[in-house]
Image (tube, rainbow, N blue to C red):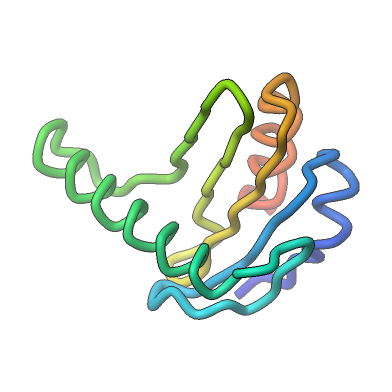
Length: 109
């Protein structure tokens, strides 16, 4: 896995919370989360099911990012590599573009 500074990424994007987990749903690092193991397991299921949906319906190779929004918040789940995933959360949905841009930079490194 590429070394990713989660706390630095959260500061750069102004997200309030975040976690990095592996493809099995086990937490590697977390910041600002109280139930990070539950969040990682749920996010892993979302990524797995979304990836299968895209493969079955659009015949895509692999899913890179899932964005979940509500009136009260935003979660962006992004693959770092084949085995590691980062999830950033914020209560301010206007931060979506900054979070996506920052995630694109670290994935392309």
